[in-house]
Image (cartoon, rainbow, N blue to C red; front, side, top):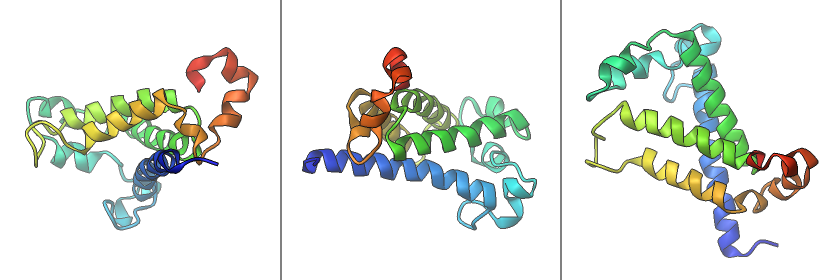
Length: 162
């Protein structure tokens, strides 16, 4: 049975995973939170166009706005948030999830420089640090399938799959 610290790590990992999975679900079906139903990916909308066109600013704005309407960017984003979220919720493949998540958080941070509410640190930085912490600790074993996942022969042979 996990102790209180392990339970807190497990719950934090699951909550962070839910943030990613929710982003996928809202963009996919337009649940009316960040995405209107009519602009859902399942209805032909672009899950990244609105943000890339209207939410980006700073020195890299031209680069990010040049990606508007790019289907590959939509697919990478959607599969990324779904994969990262599921890995975190299940407690498996946390190293791959951390690498992917830190890359995504870095791109999101860079697309909005400087951050709106703080000149240096915003939620993307915090999420990136949490992802690294989860990858370096046995966080998937706490309220997750990490212990079972780590026992698989393939995962023991290819350690970055942990």
